[in-house]
Image (cartoon, rainbow, N blue to C red; front, side, top):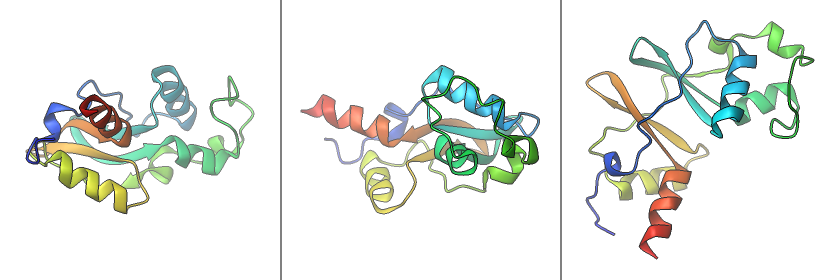
Length: 138
């Protein structure tokens, strides 16, 4: 492993995002469709929050992968994206090293970091991205 390799070389750049106008139903549907567990919430190209599949599961008490639809999840009707998202999530820059992010995520209870440059969301790095990277090294 190159100790100073930047996360920009492995981060996810093709982002699936949410806005405050989206619903919790649409967030869950997009996560399932795209096989992802974390979605940045944006206003234009600026990051304003982050929501995860586990956030949705925590409030809906369902197995999000085992159920096709969640139309019968009443809590989704009572909450909005802004109610559930992590506001001002911890972020990384594209130049942050893979080693730095690995150490950070290994020591925290979350599994992704939005990547921001000049106040613009440019990617996301997840534990899955890191695992793929380390598997390639083996």
